[in-house]
Image (cartoon, rainbow, N blue to C red; front, side, top):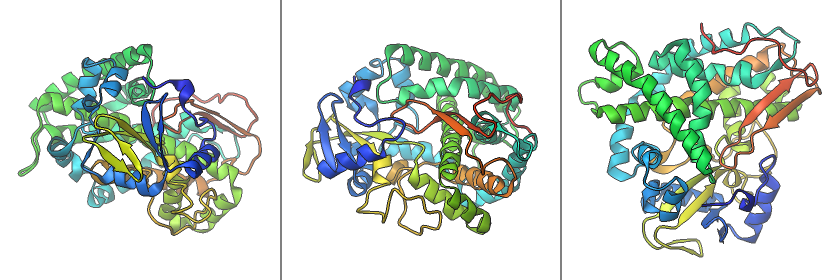
Length: 409
């Protein structure tokens, strides 16, 4: 199992260490981690695109062991779209692709904008607030809860359980975290199963009903696959966007001239979001397993060994981007890897972009206390994700007095 203390990059600001490591070698084997670190854009993109690389932990004995062996948690994730391969992955992805097309995003654009406005409504202009609990979590939770029609109770359960469940995706989950992740997954499954049964007898217009009863030509999933797909979409759809909103707002606070630029160019908010994704990617590391002996550059990776693709390092590779450590919302550079690449490119990327664009547009237009020096943050110590626990803006370091609850509109 990888050792937390062996991870060579600090969680608070890993980027200087990424640069130092990449300068030594763009791909390097780490004995303590038992994996190969992929730090350059070129090699990261090649691994993510390559069909000779697997996302299934069952292809790596060491990775499978880190997930507690061939137990329920490993089996659950191995059957998901996130960790399946080739034809199995293509079938699962085909079942949900149509829900996240550009056309589908245009259809829900107005509703997402309304949810964002509703989240901002209780915040008083010029008054302090805590961004993570009052905006970054409620907005994507409200959107995904509405898409699945699981109500406020479902949104509250997601907020409580998904951070625990996604710990299984860390590089170094402890046995206790694995048990906790398994418990969280079971809690969410027990919540979803009766809803699935109800939608089978009384389908609605929601995404879950459409998974149960696909339209003509759609991919039909088994009940277990539907529940697992829901777990993945419910967790990933709000965790990624939450982290994007948190990281992006912190970056704007640290670069007030860029916030001024966004205020002056609201029509370019989509471009701005792409730069925020590149600058501080919500997911920092993804894992792949070699299906056979392979070469990454000059490094040999044996069958069953892991490559840890460090997205955060790739997205700041000076061979790919000019002045990569500079936040430039006006940047018109090459595409980033924040949502991955190849077959496993994030299926919900369009939804995350839409929610982030509406949120940052509203932030830029608001009179909330963003032009202040008295903000503070607490970062989660995750190695795999860039996640803020708290981002207090204005009012010094005092706690917010407003109640925390999922947004409804």
